Image 1 (cartoon, one colour):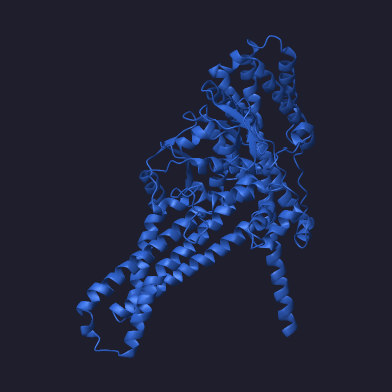
Image 2 (cartoon, rainbow over the protein chains, first blue to last red; image 1 turned 45 degrees about the vertical axis):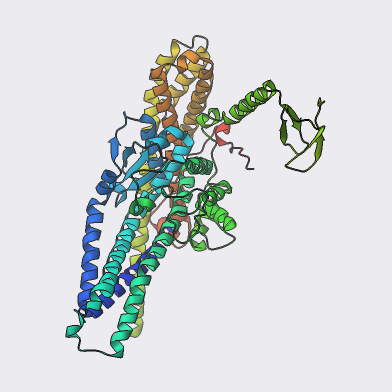
Length: 410
Length: 187
């Protein structure tokens, strides 16, 4: 079952290594240009990266939790949330119970932290707790648990640090190039390398501009891949993809943005906290795949195994590469389908909304009638309201274009 | 001379393979045992919760003696069975699950009970314990599957049969209503 995760991890490592090469390239040209010694540049780049990595590794989660203003809770503070986290801990086979934090914020979101599965935590917003039913919450927690179990948190933190280093170095270098460099302070030592100098300068500038963009694209690619994998694992843990699907829908329907999120912490969340409504987020600069696509894949699953998710994923994305290599999934297919389970009783009782809509319609019909409006039902299903001032005998349906008689008109 | 080197190399590779596979099998078996222990923890928790639940519910549900007794009986039967007999145990636990499910359905007819804070807390605990039993069983079965694959598939099956590894037993759900697939319509 976990072979595909290690296969996927390998792919992520390759991408991360690509980012590392970018970082080294920047250091190399930085050194070549400013100190005429590539080694010094490399050392500076690695030192900046190393210090930031160490901070992220040892202090990252506490920093993140402090910045998000999250407070830790125990079993008695919220038994339901605690139980759901424990359920997912059992389903995922995690050895230690992660800490649970709540952010008091009406926005709907959740994230996981922790550099290794034994020092992990799960954070949800109070809005999420209030809005989702048990199955939906379970799906979201399963998704976060998958991030912990797949060690995405560490990978993404290290990626983010590398991205940050590249951006800082490139930004600093371009500033010096364009403002400091023109003053001519640096060249005194050079004596003029002629053409070689110009080429280095050109490549350097090119790299300074391109590297941050490229690094960002890699970062987003890694992040999106991990999101799909976490969705797949959540479906596997809960055996109920519909829970996460409807949670995602619920979250995407909420217009409230999380106050305490910022660009650096965005990939940690279940859904992108900076999404803009009505905009397709399937471009290169999104940390999360579009929600509609995630929901579609989850709903198209015929079982709950990773192979089922992979099949749904391929179908939804037009036969492109799946979430994991086919060889890794072969075992999962032999293993037999992980059957889906039934929704919990709570989910069934919670489905009151269609009735509510019906009642609202009846009430509005009555209000129209009381105001002497006439109602004409068009065969296409449209309901037309005819104002009491209307004097004609017939009215044209704006939806299908048919002409309809207004009954009882004078 | 050259042939000796080749034979030696093959023997070394075989020994390394043997050790690695053996350790892997041991790891899988330990995981299996741990997963089984996890189910046990949750089942014990359920045994502990049931007397509490019956005590809370009894006052409200005077006309449901049969349902309550069925739950108590199923609990006592399941508790009395030895933990090593996977087949009989899973059958008894399945019956306890369905007796409890019936009780929780009947509860819907008692609005007073559903307003009782104590009962609501118990219900949450019980629902969650049922889920945890389900999830630990799921994880246990996944672990059994992984180990069985290793024990049966070539080449690890050679090592497994030499060192006497047995196949793990699945925790089957014997109650029919628990097995039904959900009927969800996608539009």
